[in-house]
Length: 308
Image (cartoon, rainbow, N blue to C red; front, side, top):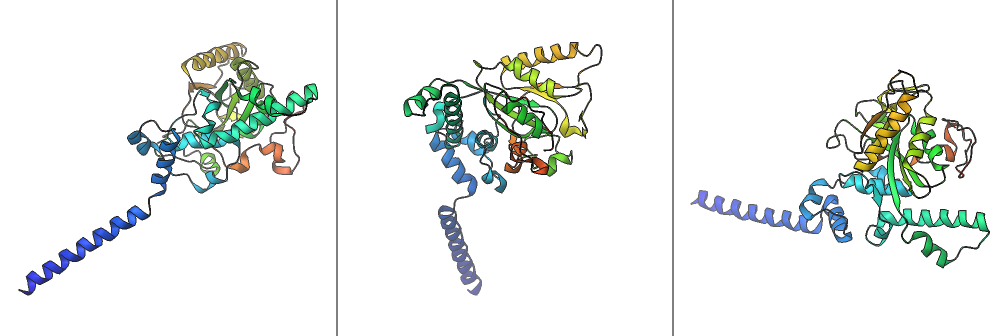
């Protein structure tokens, strides 16, 4: 009789515990669940089950990122996908992460327009600068990402840049790499610069040429200037099949210029671009190591001091 009573009591307690746990799960959804709901509601997912498998919760330092293009890179990294080859600026109403890039482009376009024509900013011009503008992306690795970001920022036609890490050993296990982890050479990532540009104003070929001009000797493996390590290997990473072909053309052109010495720059398809910590975004413009700010004005030819 006692054994029967004990079994009933245990059964009742177990049912109560399950009900409590279920209630807690309903009231306190996980961070991933909240993020998934947000992406699906915004129309940014690739289908419910696939988004749930791919989406990852952001680390704390991702919340500190304010660089416009880095926010977009973080958004796609959390979905487990590369940044698209073309950014649809009309997505600003669907994906909040795109809003800051749109505002950034409008501000810079208006600033350049005012400098050229001394025309005051107005709403009609803002509409013209955003409607129908094609924004193409490309990823380049040219050694330490501080210097090459400034070089791209100065190039007319470049709309935005951000620095980060790509081409790691495994994007499934080596997620959200930090600067210290990449510098340890254990994750296999290389420091890179993600570039958003207007292909009407600047070509991919020109951007690839700019990268090679920035590298003193691309025939050196895992070395650019004084920086050595696998995180400093150079690379052209195509975001589309067409861009991948153009990367090979740029590589072959550069390779012919070294008279038998093989260029060690790798040419691969783009993978997930993990944005670096906000501290590293526009690092030299902020002052670098020594607090000496370097300007990023378009067309500026000032020497780039790689460490500030």
